[in-house]
Length: 529
Image 1: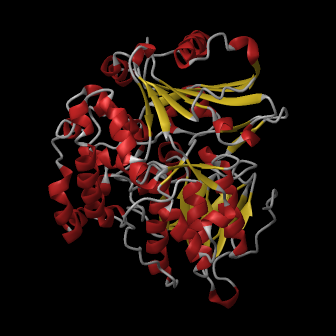
Image 2: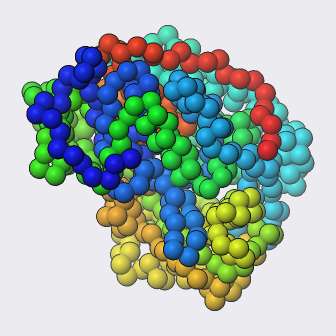
């Protein structure tokens, strides 16, 4: 990977041997996947990354003391999609990255810490026994929930694997076949009531809507497939953190011919009429036959694309759009190891609905839910010997809320640390040897996330499929989008699929070969490492 930007030739369009030149903006998961696919199909790919490392929000933070933290995602889910992308580049994901399937996948602690502690396991018989701690009748419905969601995912998979260029695409045969599973009038929680009667059981299978930055009481019922995916296909830890996956993608991208340039922030996309013809960065113009934009859409679109070319996603529309929640983060290098603390632990607020309402109305939660990542439980390389790298996350309102984070952050930090006592970590502060705090302001200002909305545009029905920014960006030509702000949405496997959709569209438009055929979904479970 080159850290400096050489002067481009006078004309970037057209390449030796007639290979089209594609510029990819941003080396996050979607940009890396698009670069891999397009380079493997014969395009000359230049991947431009504004930071000095690849990975975007899936990078690894490394401190001089030897602590390693995932910046954003802390686990790897549904590896099939990325395995297929690697295979299309002549590589094997699991040879490039060591993946350990976790069992238990995570521990759930209900508000106040007084209720049953649930160790969520992919072994369904053992998981039924865990659910029986809450409600034996719910335990008996687990297999039915899995069977119904297996069918739902199979029905929706063709819809989630193609682009939506016009409203007519909503009437496709695959969409019509999937509609009976959609139940647009139901939320995730309402759908789960068809299976589980205890609200705590429903939380076991609905808190995953937070992966989309949404409440299970508002998130569309389609997304019960999120928890299904965890139990069916596994929750994995990549050795060295999720940044190891991004580094492996960069290696493979370069191996198939992509050029990755770091410290190369793009200032704007160049257009001739509606056609994207290159980018400008550092006062230089780099020309191309097509441009792929992998950046937070709400942040990047107003800066890179003229408002007149975004009629459906103008500045005014972006200001009215609905966005996910944000997150408050603490990255803590701590003296000591805590074998009694699970790799992943979720503490759910005692009044979970009130907690969500506070977030949705822009208030600072009085009793926040917390997620704690303790990766040395599986991977000792994530911290120096005898130390731990703890990652603490609390969902909070995005910057459309009323919280003055410059003033309130220290107070909220103290509250979050106090709540760790419920997870078995009292008096942690004297052990802290390294600390970094990230608030919604930091997500916006340091990591270029629009409104500090960590999970991008909300995934309600009015902002999905055709109603989400398109992979082939409408109103323009030869400009393609990847990332959580475009179709199909947020989450690593979904972003990889979105990159594959965009790469397929671009490949057809430029006459590249090698467009993938998706493999049938494997049945059954993978082996636990």
